[in-house]
Image 1 (cartoon, rainbow, N blue to C red):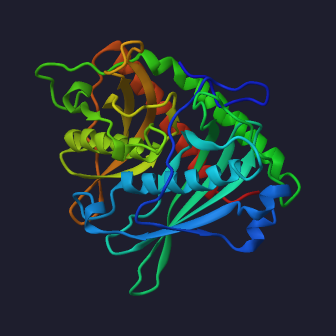
Image 2 (image 1 turned 90 degrees about the vertical axis):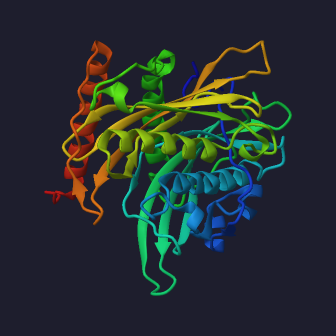
Length: 375
């Protein structure tokens, strides 16, 4: 069971995932003004970048839009690049920025094949041992020039020593551009740390298969994917890219949602994705998903990632990551459809249903509060 992100006085034994390198993309430093927010040796290192890539047919889901997991992977790649650059911006021990958490991200608009994705990443807060990166994704129709916002996400990284990837190093500080920015970041840091602590109780939970399940039950749509981690899944340092894991998680969640609805489905949002430990090359990972809650037009799916180091007898199977995905059901015309209501059977399923309902109502109230006019 992994601790929360490092506090200013302690560092955890190691999280984790990272994404270094960006195939088929172009990473562009932001305007020189961004670098002015840095101090000392870091002043020469931009605190923000933008990457862009045209969406190809192999990025599509079955509906013809860009796969949600592909977008999550691009978000993580941009975050990994800017945070690794920043963590190596001062003279000291070389490190790689490892992904610890992706906070809630909403899929605001679908991205289509042939459009260009612009992924902008900016460092917005640093603690002693962690980096907050905020990412925005825009889609561009290169025929009309139309642009639209598709995603926003906040990611947290920790720097791991290249000499010992279980050692967490200190993060170079950022000089903030306005008063109050550091305090705002500190509040976000404390909030996500508490959220991570609340998820650790699920680390022993597993998804068990059931023979001849009834339709609309949890067992009917639950699904698992088993994947052998190969070199193409990993960083140069031998553990899995965070974006690779997130894409596999989205694929499993999508299968669960499609089995439950029997219709076209799309990712609507992802609650915090928590990474508890590294997944190394040669491990066998099992990604399991199950429906936990349904509203009239959406379904919440819990996804659990377990790693089995089959070539290392000294380490047992462990929980590597977890997240909640929200999907909606769409008609062939792209209109929202009612979701079949989940039938929880066991006490655990009923408990998870009520917890999911609480998260749904909390997020619904938050959205309504954002659109209501301020007094």
